[in-house]
Image (tube, rainbow, N blue to C red; front, side, top):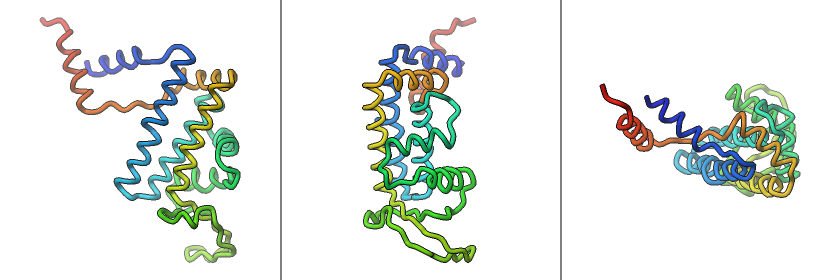
Length: 204
């Protein structure tokens, strides 16, 4: 009963025209997904987990950019390369943050995750010896507030490009048709929809 009610609303609310699909994706990211990441960070102060959410957003945005459900290294790196400031290393972010942090929840070998230290963002410390492995490497600081601002700006720049490029809108629509952005339904909305569905079902 509840599944049918939600599935029915989902079909009804799906965008149909390219303009509607673009508007739906823009609203999902700029009004819900990206602000949601910020709320998680502000309410929990969990820096590592906030970085994980940010990189999930980058990966999903890259799917709309290339126009496919199957996202991976090439799409992620291309999105970072084209829409993030040039100071970022797309390969390093993919290898050490998207892969090591998200998939294995492990420490990265070339990045130091920080917050509330904008003065350290993208600065480097060279030839640092790891207390864990004893190996030396060059470390780059990523400050969450700055990284988050760059993510939001990258999304805005991407959507601005889509509005003027027929090929990009075509790719966005292709991705939307197979993997539209996840939508959140509150407990109150679920209860309201379930109640409405029950009232309209025949008795007997």
